[in-house]
Every structure is written in C-alpha cells, then in structure tokens.
Image (tube, rainbow, N blue to C red; front, side, top):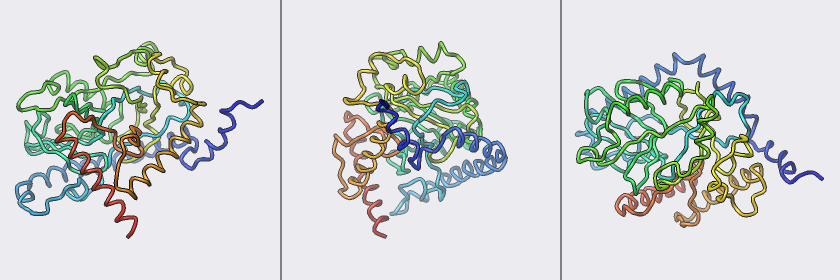
Length: 352
C-alpha cells in the first residue's frame, strides 16, 4: 500500500511555489555571479541614498508628515531577505550554513548620522534610539544596515545577516564573507553590552558549517541553544555560502522547523524539539501544504477584519512578522499599532 506521504508528493511538487529548488538555486547563483559588478554599483547607491537622506534628518523631522516607512523615506524598496521552505536536501549540503533562528520580531535596523532606526519586516519605522553601531557612532560616512530578530524580554537584537556595516558594503558579498565579517566585528567590539549609550544589545547568532558534520550535529542536538531557553528556538535557517543578499524571497535561504530536520536532512535533533511536533503530523510534505494554506487564509482574514487574535499568530516569516513578547508594553503597543496600520493599507490597496 502506498504510504501516506507519497500520496501528497504529487500535490506538493505541483504547487506553483515548489518547483525544483535545486534548479532555481543554480540559476540564481549563476545570475548573481554574472551580474556581480552591476549589483555592486546598485548596492553602493543604496548606501549613498541612505546616508544622503538621513543627512537631512533635521529638515525632515520638522515636517508635519514625516515619512514612516523605509520606502517613502529613502525612495527605494530594500526588502528583507526571506526564506523558502527547504523542501528537499540540497545536492551538496556542504555548500550551506546552519543558522538557528530565535523567536522574536523580524526587523531591519539602520544606523546612520548619529542615530539608529528600527523598521518592521514590511518597512515601517517603529523606533529611533541610540546605539554603538557604526553610523550611530564613529565616522560620519558610515552606514550600518542589519537584518535582525528583536527579542523583547531580552532587549536584544539577534543579527541574522547584514547589508552594510560601517563603510563596508555587504549586499553583494557571498554569505560566507558576510558571516565571518560580522563575527570578527563583534569580537572586536562590545555591541552586546547594554548601557546608557547602547540601550539595546546586538548579538551575532552562531552559525554552523555543514562541512563540519560534528559541529552541525552538535547544533541540532543542543538544547537549549540560548541560556535558560531564552529566547526560544523558532526554527532553523539554511544559507547557501555563495549567495548574495537578496531583497525578498529566495531559494538560497531555506527554513525548517526543528522537528522536520530528521526527515528532510537525515540529522537527529534534540528530543526536546521532537516533542513540538504537532498532533496528527503525517510528514513534512503534507505539513508544508497545510501550513501554507492555513497561513494564506489567516492573512486574508486579518486583512479583512483588521484584527489579530493571539491564537492566529505565527512565526513563519513568509506571511507574518515574527511575534514579540508582551513584557515591554510601550514597544509592544507600537508593534500592534504598526500591524493594524499595515492591515488598513492592505485593505486600501485591495480596494483600489
């Protein structure tokens, strides 16, 4: 008798977002390599635009209607890099990094001209503060743009990736360079220490190289990954070492919940993660289909209602911002207001 998973294989592969990932990865890597010099010119423009726009911040802040989104402020659409489901084991797993992702609020952080801004995944400004990041301090020509997960009860930004850091453009650098660059900078500085001039900590997330099977196995087996299980693990991200930073969804960054890892990659994970497997779980083929369908329905419902129920919240970054804990009432209120504004804008766009 055909097993349960195989019944859903054809449906899974026929999904318009589930074409063969390996083919798409190879094509995208080829395009990135061929157009590397062009992309470098574009990314330098991004850094220059951010600096030039923030250079006139005093004039901008006098305006009654100051821009509240990244796109409106800088007139560019620089989106965060989003993952796809890792739907199959890559042909050469040694070409990848493993990055544990904590539960928190996905955001973009920009430091330039003496202050630091926090933007949601959708690009809405929700906070301005001081930090020790290059751009907030140091050379007046520095710009730092980080891809982060903010964990509210730790007052900490956990850094997934970087677009620029100080005077170094990183968008078009390979992931392996970006990760090692960030690691070296955080060894040299104290960005992770909270102080009056640095009210929020910034921490690099440890990454694991699949060339070192022992190290990766330890990463999968370790529980908790952060002290006292705070923050909690949301899931695992997988970065292709040769990939440039991509605005939007890319097959060169994959995502799996921890309990899915043994099926897809044939690596064991901590027994603690296997207890998180949903009831009636019937394999990752069906789980992905059901999850995507459920999230699409919830997103539609949120758009129409303008409300967000706690049981509808999700950490899957393809559909909603990752949730923020409730300990900081002021910041949480900002995040909630921001979500409602986005929903209203979605409705206006739908009706237009």
